[in-house]
Length: 262
Image (tube, rainbow, N blue to C red; front, top):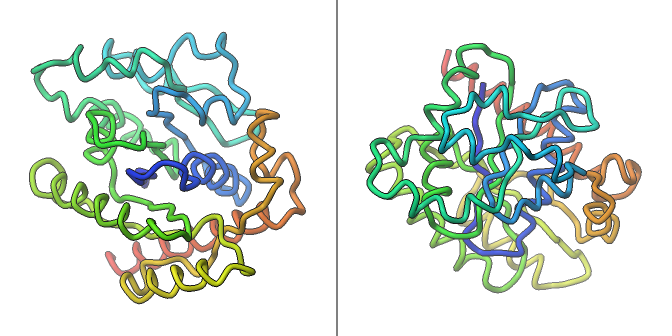
């Protein structure tokens, strides 16, 4: 089981959209996937059509009440793709946990039974766009961080902040945490700034940047309002095809990583 924290401390970069659609695409190519919605706003849950009634068990119960993650997970409309929904109560978790023991390891501890069972190939964690206890829990639980990066002027500044956070977590809580990769989102080939940002990011991160770029696409933006991933909303659009290509690239990189480790 590979646990990826989908994170960027800058909002509006396509983080939740990537979490939803990468998860869907991974399931479409045959992987068993769990998406954990760790943002109190619950946009990933809403974007997958999970109603409030379906969120009666959620991530809050797992972190605060030690409910098994497998029991709190909800099946989505796509076979092989489950979600652990969010709840607004998560916004107060920092105060509720206070100085509780292993407060930064709650999610990691909760995922251990899933690792042992080998039920999922990938667990994706949609992080809040801020450095708080939920983000720290996600990075402590993760094997690696997956970074969606909007191709616009302030992108590299947000990425610098994220790298500092990764270094902090690596230094004190999760020494094996690594950057899985960076995916360029909202890419507009008609805009010279998009091309410039892409060149700068590739120059800085090299092979960590995925070849696949996610284009700015109106169908991708429309899909969440219908409670559907874009691959179900419009499979043939450019955004859907890009996420399928990204999923294949993620799986290919993971295969190469396992071969190197062996």
